[in-house]
Image 1 (cartoon, helix red, strand yellow):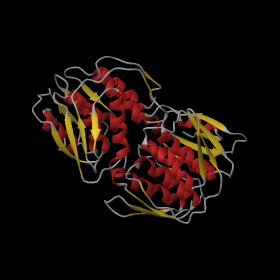
Image 2 (cartoon, helix red, strand yellow):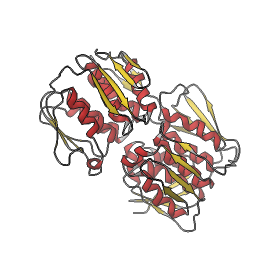
Image 3 (tube, helix red, strand yellow):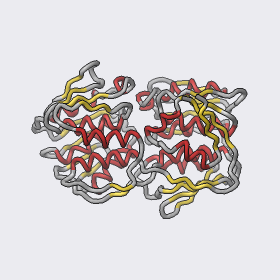
Image 4 (cartoon, rainbow, N blue to C red):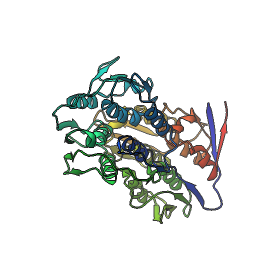
Length: 413
């Protein structure tokens, strides 16, 4: 399937209601599965990853085979959750999932008494997970530079371990706001957890059931910041469901947006983003170590406005749904923007300004964020997006929402 996108600027301010955060939803679902009793969750994400987690949690039985597809967070969180269950389960996923490392998390769980074996390549899915055999281990050390999801997965199960758990973080900490999100949610549901900057100290004790409402998704908001940046001065969009006191680290897109002439106004349960001036940046450098999921949105924003710069702290992008640095490099080349990949440390230099001298056909690499960020280029002219349905992973209503703000979205297959 392909979509052909076009754009005509709307005459009046538009309002978009953002879906519940996938990151918060998935953490809350694991907490509910471990809590002392069931509780209601309002505004759960309608993302495919969240639906997959709900279905698989309901399907956990002895001898179950559970397939997460391309849902990375779901796979990592379920690995830890299943490690505490009785019986034996097989946890598998898509072909890309089988290329994404899981070894650090498996090693940590084995130290705690988990029975886990690799069914194919060592260090990678799929996994056979047997019954838990708790031991006296109460402290573990984990590399913090690979994936914050490994650490969050361990944090979430820690309160139900017999003696709790202390998690020491080794090396550079990536995506710290996601760890603090996990900590805040755990505390909300009664977990006793402290953090000193290098270690999480989590006491044993059941989660307490209480109704909970999921806030809107700040990661999804980033695409609309790109759209506003590309529009004329005075253009604005209202995004419903976002909060100023958010637990999501990707709220920093509001600060980044200021550099590109975008003002964010906060209301009770929404924000208004408005272009107040033309961005006069020659260059923009930024370290995304705390917010890697924003890197593609900012890269596209820079390309559309002709801003060069060095984007760093991107090492985790290589093990996402695709190698996002390589994917950006390949796709931006089609619009005359170049990216120099500076190697495994996760830095890239971007140069050039978007040129649409043909109708570019953008590949999405089974990556929802590639589809949604590249779609913003339709403001400058007609473009095509291959496999647009990939947005279902995190934002199923994305294309519908684009049509509300002036985008033409036409299937051409």
